[in-house]
Every structure is written in C-alpha cells, then in structure tokens.
Amino acid sequence: MPETSDSDFTWEGYVSSNNNELVANLGNFVHRILTMSHKNFEGKIPFFDQNKDSTKIIIDKCNKGILEVGESISNRKFREALNNLMNLARFGNQFLDKNEPWKKIKDNKDEAGEILGQSIIIISAISSMLEPFLPGSAIKLQEIIFNKKINNWSLILPVPGTEFQKPDPLFEKLDEEEVLKENEIISNE
Image (cartoon, rainbow, N blue to C red; front, side, top):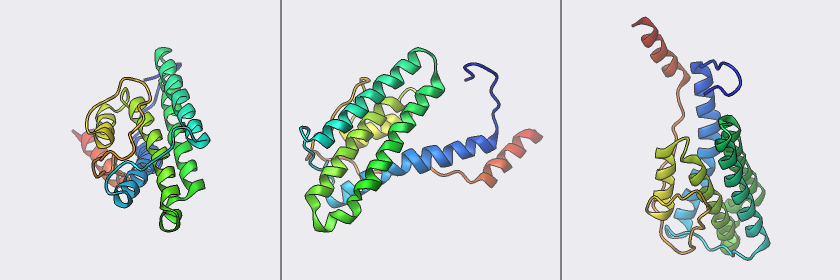
C-alpha cells in the first residue's frame, strides 16, 4: 500500500522480497533456531535465565520492537512497521552468528541452550509483530512454540522445558523463472 506516492508492483520485486527477506532473513533465522533446539533439547524449549543481562537485553529489544511496529501501524506507516519487524529478525541472525550455538552444542550444551532459548524469545516477539502482515505464518509460529495461538500484541516469554512442535520452514523460496512464467500466462489471458 503506498504511503506517500504511487507504488509499482513487479514480479521481480515480489520474488526478491520473498527470497531475500522472508526466506533468507526471517525464515532462515526461525528455522535454524527451532530445528537446532528441537533436535538437541528433546523437542523442548532450552533453558534461559530471565535475570541474565544478555536475556534482559533481548527482552528489551523485543519489547521495543513490538512497540515500534505497533506505533508505525497506528500511524499507517506500514513499510516502517515491516522494516522494524525485519530489523528484529536481522538482530536475531546477528546474535546467532556472534554466539554460534552450533559450535557450542558439543562442548557446552547449557551455553548453547541459553543462546537458543534467548533466540526463541526473539521468535516469540516476531510471531506477535508478524500477525498484521502474515497472519497465517504468525499463527503457525505461535502454534509451534506455544501449541496454540497466543498473540495479544505483547512479548510472551516461552517457558523453558515445555515441549514444542517440530518446525517446518515458514516460507518457501520462489523460483524466479516459474513466477515469470505465471505472469506471462496471466498477461496472455
């Protein structure tokens, strides 16, 4: 939806946004965390300490993100809202890359679990912020983590030790050639 000027839709832009933002940024972060956690922690949310400074930073970042997305939506600044949501996913990817739980899982499972549990906090926040834009994906995330739809536009901390569903990828990469073929078919009708 244009906010200040006309908007041009292109299939190329659609494919690029899907593949680079939804799949590579948000979907990859979510799937890596949930898959690694499910596999290495018996399908349960790994333990994280809510009182640890690093966890408090993540909780604050998530609460700030939810507030910013909500304010942007209220002000009808939808692109800004989406950008704020994607910034939280980028932060999650940076946090993950910096802390490398896949390397720590063999030597220090507790530390790896802490990182993964903290990352699931970020996923919980994302599931709340995603609902106005992609409600089906938001609900799917909430059902994976909490086994039910739980969004009330606030950060809900996952409970360490609770079981969660084995994740499937949230988004699929689009084949640019296939999308262009479909566009061609539609144009010729």
